[in-house]
Image (cartoon, rainbow, N blue to C red; front, side, top):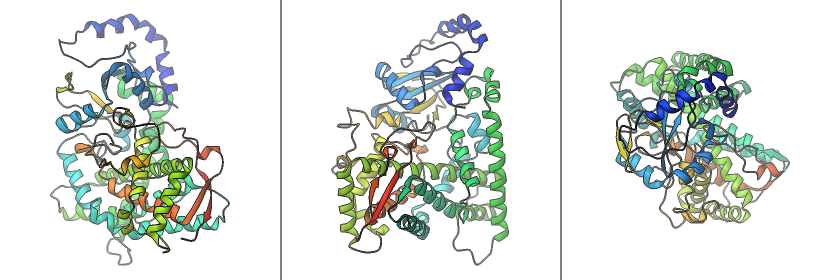
Length: 495
């Protein structure tokens, strides 16, 4: 059920009207305790500002911020929600008050899917999260570990290029191929082999969709029953059951095969089991923690990586001059070899500029993963109470006309003379977040995008087939993907 439909269900319930006057002025008459709270748009009884989110919350919140400023306080049901929409406010929040905003809200759907928030993405801030982050950064996604999976990237990329070649210039669904490529790489790296069946892909797609769904009970506890009525609770339980059975099989299979010399390389499940067995970090992992971490890697890595690559290609198809410039760079670097290799990527500034510009215009998670304040904070001159949920509108920040010239235009050249990067140090561009809760998989994702895009334009001339390929309409959810697939005809070229 869509977010809009859910809001219509509970916002039109008869008893809400009966509570109208009561709810309306109990909250407004409860004074602000003389605190200087951020400006707030008018809200409705019980549901607060939920009716204003629409189908694209990042766009709706950006529009509201034009009237109420870069730091505004809304109500999602009974929950105070701070929306941050400027570089200055984001920097103050993440850099100056990073510790105060380092936690995550305990939302009901992630709580169910991620084993009571035992993953790194949604875990509350504390010792458990710090230990798990250390394991992730040092053992799972370190520079050395990412480089060790180069062969996997090359093999899966070559397989995709062969499929395009075999299409013999007929129309191919490039979006589908990119999704399969990303899925295969992440499965092999994480699980040790590919799971390419429709059931597997659909299962993880359903899990990703649920993470982006709105749960009424998380914001209006008295209406928790609406989640049962809408079917979200049932779907979440069913998806969790299927995921848990799958992950049980994966972990048990790795335990059984341990010591098999035929194993090609040590995947991330192997590493987690080694840490569990040897207790090498002094932090005791149990099976639920391992499954939650695996799930984080699978859901968090697959969709966002392929989505970023898809948006970059869509923009290149819409801007032939940029495509031509990137192809020229790739062919100068490739020098007639069979493929561009990863050592070449540092010599391709326009490639990096194209991907930065695509991430700027099409932030995969426009509102990032929500934060939650764990103490009272003074932010941007306003008093922010402990327990406030916080969304950074990274999409709005990346299109701020005071920071970007012609912000709605696709202009990779803007990054050729700029030091701005996406790694969390420049708050104008934070598609992966920043501070303590920055995504630890940046390097893993970006190297896939760079090597695949470089070789696509090196090996083929891509021609859009159908209006859908050039249409930039978005899907709804926590990850904003391209609504229509990219359909292309790919003509092989002699490098």
